[in-house]
View (cartoon, rainbow, N blue to C red):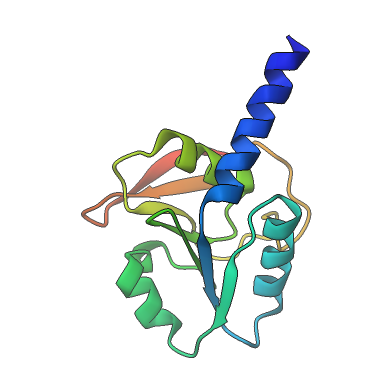
Length: 138
Protein backbone atom coordinates (compact mmCIF):
# COMPACT_ATOMS: atom_id res chain seq x y z
CA UNK A 1 0.00 0.00 0.00
CA UNK A 2 2.83 2.42 0.82
CA UNK A 3 4.38 1.77 -2.59
CA UNK A 4 1.11 2.79 -4.27
CA UNK A 5 0.94 5.99 -2.23
CA UNK A 6 4.53 6.89 -3.08
CA UNK A 7 3.95 6.11 -6.76
CA UNK A 8 0.84 8.32 -6.74
CA UNK A 9 2.71 11.19 -5.11
CA UNK A 10 5.54 10.90 -7.62
CA UNK A 11 3.07 10.93 -10.50
CA UNK A 12 1.27 14.00 -9.14
CA UNK A 13 4.60 15.75 -8.63
CA UNK A 14 5.75 14.92 -12.16
CA UNK A 15 2.48 16.22 -13.62
CA UNK A 16 3.04 19.59 -11.97
CA UNK A 17 6.74 19.71 -12.86
CA UNK A 18 6.23 18.78 -16.52
CA UNK A 19 3.65 21.49 -17.16
CA UNK A 20 5.09 24.79 -18.38
CA UNK A 21 3.78 27.60 -16.20
CA UNK A 22 3.81 31.39 -16.27
CA UNK A 23 2.83 33.59 -13.35
CA UNK A 24 1.82 37.21 -13.90
CA UNK A 25 2.08 39.55 -10.92
CA UNK A 26 2.66 43.10 -9.84
CA UNK A 27 6.31 43.91 -9.07
CA UNK A 28 5.35 45.48 -5.77
CA UNK A 29 3.28 42.60 -4.37
CA UNK A 30 5.02 40.73 -1.54
CA UNK A 31 2.43 37.97 -1.19
CA UNK A 32 2.83 37.15 -4.90
CA UNK A 33 6.55 36.56 -4.32
CA UNK A 34 5.68 34.37 -1.31
CA UNK A 35 3.28 32.36 -3.49
CA UNK A 36 6.01 31.82 -6.11
CA UNK A 37 8.29 30.53 -3.31
CA UNK A 38 5.47 28.17 -2.25
CA UNK A 39 5.01 26.91 -5.82
CA UNK A 40 8.75 26.34 -6.26
CA UNK A 41 8.93 24.43 -2.96
CA UNK A 42 6.14 22.18 -4.25
CA UNK A 43 7.63 21.40 -7.66
CA UNK A 44 5.89 24.01 -9.81
CA UNK A 45 8.47 26.42 -11.21
CA UNK A 46 6.71 29.16 -13.13
CA UNK A 47 8.32 31.76 -15.30
CA UNK A 48 7.46 34.99 -13.46
CA UNK A 49 6.51 38.16 -15.29
CA UNK A 50 5.90 41.46 -13.52
CA UNK A 51 3.07 43.41 -15.14
CA UNK A 52 1.38 46.75 -14.64
CA UNK A 53 -1.79 45.63 -16.45
CA UNK A 54 -3.06 42.83 -14.21
CA UNK A 55 -6.73 43.60 -14.98
CA UNK A 56 -6.04 43.01 -18.68
CA UNK A 57 -4.21 39.75 -17.87
CA UNK A 58 -7.20 38.52 -15.85
CA UNK A 59 -9.60 39.38 -18.69
CA UNK A 60 -7.31 37.67 -21.23
CA UNK A 61 -7.22 34.41 -19.26
CA UNK A 62 -10.84 34.59 -18.05
CA UNK A 63 -10.18 34.85 -14.33
CA UNK A 64 -11.49 38.39 -13.86
CA UNK A 65 -14.75 37.13 -12.32
CA UNK A 66 -12.82 35.53 -9.45
CA UNK A 67 -9.90 37.96 -9.23
CA UNK A 68 -7.03 37.92 -6.78
CA UNK A 69 -3.60 39.51 -7.00
CA UNK A 70 -1.74 37.16 -9.39
CA UNK A 71 -2.57 34.84 -12.28
CA UNK A 72 -0.82 31.55 -13.05
CA UNK A 73 -1.26 29.97 -16.48
CA UNK A 74 -0.43 26.27 -16.62
CA UNK A 75 -1.32 23.68 -19.28
CA UNK A 76 -3.87 26.05 -20.80
CA UNK A 77 -5.65 26.67 -17.49
CA UNK A 78 -5.88 29.89 -15.51
CA UNK A 79 -5.09 29.55 -11.80
CA UNK A 80 -6.13 32.74 -10.07
CA UNK A 81 -4.83 33.72 -6.66
CA UNK A 82 -3.44 31.73 -3.75
CA UNK A 83 -4.58 28.29 -4.93
CA UNK A 84 -3.11 25.32 -3.03
CA UNK A 85 -0.84 23.02 -5.06
CA UNK A 86 -3.17 20.07 -4.29
CA UNK A 87 -5.90 21.81 -6.31
CA UNK A 88 -3.49 22.54 -9.18
CA UNK A 89 -2.39 18.90 -9.26
CA UNK A 90 -6.03 17.76 -9.35
CA UNK A 91 -6.68 20.17 -12.23
CA UNK A 92 -3.71 18.85 -14.22
CA UNK A 93 -4.57 15.23 -13.54
CA UNK A 94 -8.33 15.40 -14.27
CA UNK A 95 -8.19 17.98 -17.09
CA UNK A 96 -11.79 19.16 -16.61
CA UNK A 97 -13.56 21.16 -19.33
CA UNK A 98 -13.26 24.46 -17.45
CA UNK A 99 -11.31 27.68 -17.95
CA UNK A 100 -9.50 27.39 -14.63
CA UNK A 101 -9.64 27.51 -10.85
CA UNK A 102 -9.39 30.33 -8.34
CA UNK A 103 -9.18 31.43 -4.76
CA UNK A 104 -10.80 34.88 -5.09
CA UNK A 105 -9.52 37.72 -2.98
CA UNK A 106 -6.61 37.22 -0.63
CA UNK A 107 -7.66 34.90 2.23
CA UNK A 108 -5.31 35.11 5.21
CA UNK A 109 -5.15 31.31 5.51
CA UNK A 110 -4.05 30.63 1.92
CA UNK A 111 -0.60 29.63 0.61
CA UNK A 112 1.60 32.71 0.32
CA UNK A 113 -0.63 34.72 2.67
CA UNK A 114 -0.25 32.90 5.95
CA UNK A 115 -0.56 29.53 7.60
CA UNK A 116 -2.62 27.22 5.42
CA UNK A 117 -4.42 24.18 6.82
CA UNK A 118 -4.97 21.66 3.99
CA UNK A 119 -8.61 20.81 3.32
CA UNK A 120 -10.00 24.12 4.55
CA UNK A 121 -9.62 26.58 1.67
CA UNK A 122 -12.53 26.88 -0.79
CA UNK A 123 -11.39 26.76 -4.42
CA UNK A 124 -13.71 27.88 -7.19
CA UNK A 125 -13.99 26.52 -10.75
CA UNK A 126 -14.19 29.04 -13.59
CA UNK A 127 -16.41 27.61 -16.32
CA UNK A 128 -15.72 28.31 -19.97
CA UNK A 129 -18.65 30.76 -19.99
CA UNK A 130 -17.14 32.58 -16.99
CA UNK A 131 -19.55 31.19 -14.39
CA UNK A 132 -17.99 30.63 -10.97
CA UNK A 133 -18.90 27.57 -8.89
CA UNK A 134 -17.53 25.63 -5.94
CA UNK A 135 -14.78 23.15 -6.86
CA UNK A 136 -13.93 21.85 -3.40
CA UNK A 137 -11.85 22.59 -0.33
CA UNK A 138 -8.11 22.13 -0.46
